[in-house]
Image (tube, rainbow, N blue to C red; front, side, top):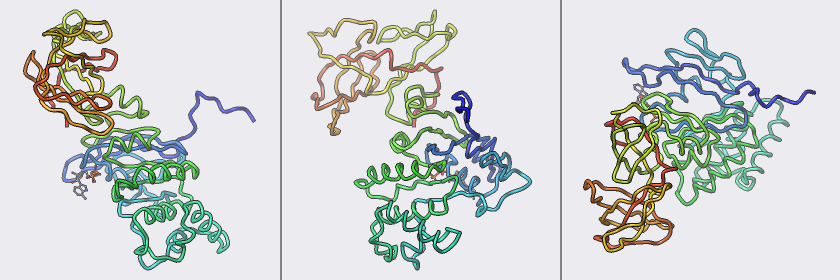
Length: 371
Ligand SMILES: Nc1ncnc2c1ncn2[C@@H]1O[C@H](COP(=O)(O)OP(=O)(O)OP(=O)(O)O)[C@@H](O)[C@H]1O
């Protein structure tokens, strides 16, 4: 057999094209397109109310789009005119509340949607119970289980019929914080073994970065950026996208000769026309700080530009880092810096801040305040 060519992507397991859903004349899902490959986890990430769950409902077939199409393995399963019923779409669903059947025991819950002979069904249920460490709970009822165990049963039940696609809506948000990281990792391992294409909805950037092969960042019904977590974090599409993942600092300036003059020295703005107002965005962890030397800071460098002085307003210990807020001398604005390890300067201490040139983003100025 010829080797698969690396430049040709296989047929997407899930493809949605230009999907829109209007409620009372408002586009809640607005021209959304995305693809998910088998064995890949894509996280639909965005703030509450941006249309994530509605997108999942359209794919599952429990709501109907006004425009657009959904394909599974290249087969059209719904467009404006025709629709394959939800139970025939080979889609597994998992929700925040797990929705286990209270009157069925664990083994019966897991076996609920499995078709085939009795022996096949038994084998599949046993294999999943073993894989999920649930054998000793096979005869227990959902109310006898902890939250983490119920989550595992719900995952096993959705995977039992071997769905081609798994749709997961905030599947970890009902869980205790202490358990969550471990359960996320276990879940990811099982999902990868099963090889389904996974579309997981979350409003938590950390969860998306931990789980996703790809993140689709959603805002006001639209996908505004899609890519690997590293790229979405390190090359955000705009100021709001940057702000969704962490606190940000914003310095506004005007471009002259592809350069912007600021209190932190000049920033490159290649290709930006003269006179354009820009926002220079920097995350708190990419600010360096240095001591005050009788009113002077460190010397400027090409990597970090000119230092600017600020006075500590507040410093908070955050575990493995400290968050320090400064009132800046140059315009009275507040800037935030996170500093690894324990460094808790007293309020009123003057320090010098520098901005790592390789870690800042330059966007056309927008009035939108970061969320
Ligand atoms: N059946 C409906 N009728 C009218 N409006 C609806 C309906 N379902 C959802 N909406 C509205 O559509 C918008 C998107 O809702 P959706 O639940 O998809 O968002 P979400 O991003 O999943 O948010 P959350 O994380 O809070 O669930 C919201 O403003 C919601 O009020």
